[in-house]
Length: 235
Image: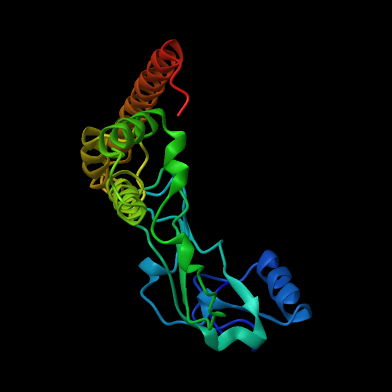
């Protein structure tokens, strides 16, 4: 779409020169009353280009701005920042284009009964088995115990199990993910913009490790399920 303001729908801080497709895009946003957000902020060219050609070299730079974020003109002021991230660790010749928005959302009241318990974890055979074992160990009904005491004891046992096995995760991580794979990803990231060949090679190694980790995880779960089936454990 190029640099330089030509209408109120396209900002002056684009990249490069306008072509026919840029004219078509401007016509589209004008008809639909939209604004092109990543032309509205003055940034270094490094944070403007969204695509790098395979022919790009230090002595011949071939980089363009071909990805855009567009929004209804009415909400123009809700966007506070937009820029491309050329250093992102992704296997693509396109750079992630990220926008920051301030949006007022309607507050949703959470049902207090939900608490921090994630019962979906009971679908995992290992968690299911551990919860069953814990219940069998901790629940002990004494003949002479008062009903109120029994209820209190049962409630405490359930709360302890929720905290230990069924608490909600604050940061989700794939069950099959390993520290070795995370270290390999961190090592790969440093080659994103310095050596594309090494980056691609390391990416293949990581994908292979991921497949192996997933296969091992599923095999372990299948064995666990088979063992439980043999024991007729249907908790």
